[in-house]
Image 1 (tube, helix red, strand yellow):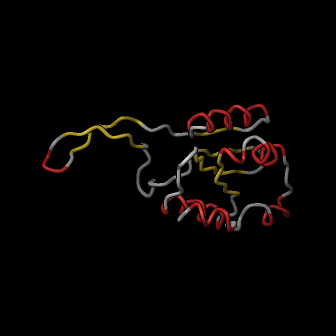
Image 2 (cartoon, rainbow, N blue to C red):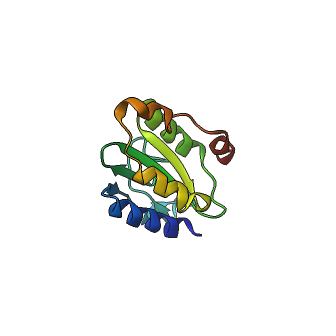
Length: 134
């Protein structure tokens, strides 16, 4: 499954469960390349430290940050850094792949976690996720 198709499916399911969803889609931008030539590149228009910012931010009774990876996609180091920063700030952060659809995604989105129990759910980087960042 392509990442964009998985992302659309996640957004649809999240909305059925009452989540607010934010996604900043990439744009085709004209940038000056080597030698001064103008090239077109797909870029996500997030400034400052935005490189690697998660694909989706969801909010209901708790915030979620989700990086979506389609077949063959790999987690980049700057994406892993953002997910770690969200976790350190107390936000659940996930890397979702087609293997997680729909069961794991449904569990995450259906679950209503009391604040005092959230620290156990998704703040530690799993061994599987560490492998995805390689």
